[in-house]
Length: 337
Image (cartoon, rainbow, N blue to C red; front, top):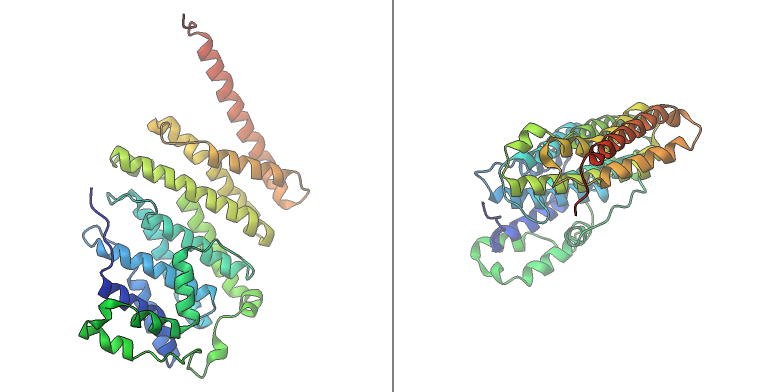
């Protein structure tokens, strides 16, 4: 099994600089180049394990720049498709023979995808922030904290890093470009229908792909890695379904069928995997959560409930048939003495 890689002190400091580079930008063209640089760090290949550390750090930077409105809206619109494609590619890297750890890169990419969609669809969206977020948030909102951090870092004595330390102005608190009003704002997220439509379409498509596990790819993995992929995929699935229930269902407009389709996929994916030889790895937590949400939806009298009701009834039929078949089979087995 390949060992996870960590950033060296010098590389860590360079990334601290990258996190705060935005405070030095002078034009929209520079920000476009900066954002493209961040997206390039989201390329992950098995022969380049160090890129995993770069990618994890980059996910935090991108997510927080959107959360704190530190990105021009034109740049966000221009790069949304590319950003979601890279995030989805990272999630799909779960089927590669890579390292196992407590929070794999592909899982963090999935959470990042959820959070970015949440920030744009609902300006009041409040994700659970990690310690890494807190640190990065401080650097983004207060570039002076970056210089203080560099001064406290022993490895800064490396002559190659002196220029980085000296290039930061601790008094810089604001973006220096003249077009500051062109940055993303809560008003944009509320009023920009085009932006919301783009995010809705990409988000729903991404959620469907993430929840629909690839059985053939799982079969190529070693038992230990397959177990972790299934376990963490179920965790990510529950995060997605909870996000749909708490945010998307409340904000949905004409996406009734797409939302119910995703919940239905979540209700059956891991049940199907358990029938295909993965029963030791699968739990029914995601399926039960999806059924609970469908039941809650069906209590209402609206377009969403009209679509959800027949799907819920069909799922209940399937569950009862399987239960009765299991009872019939167990009845043929003599009791142990």
